[in-house]
Amino acid sequence: MALRSFLRRLEKQANEGRAGFVNRDGRVVRYDPDKAGAELFVYAIKLWSKDADEDPPEVPPILKRIREEARDPEAVLRRFEPDSPGRFMSPVLLLDPFEAPFEDGSESPEDGA
Image (cartoon, rainbow, N blue to C red; front, side, top):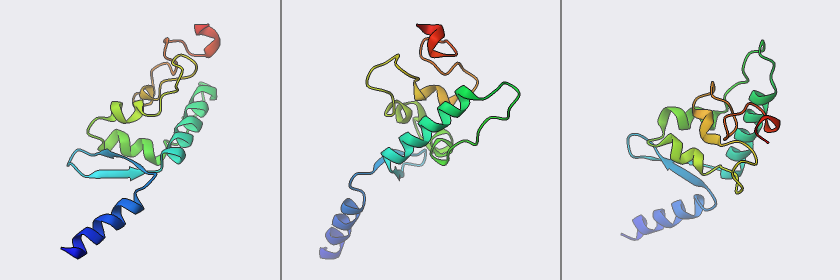
């Protein structure tokens, strides 16, 4: 019994400050929310600024895992939405890279203003 509670405390300490999501088989996948948010932001900027004839940028590992493993990918990506909607993009749109990247359906912030 003491070993089990000791292991739970260690696991809790190891996961402090880390976010997670439930994958399709019920396990929790942990990630660093600051690092994941930065990767998603950079990826979105690269998608937005690339030329039409350029290949799309490489999908960040966290987005691959969310797309392929998360039980509810949309709910996971909603955690990364900006505090003021409409100011930038909704990360939920990264689930389908062919949609317009801005919440109002425009392809650039100037189009929707």
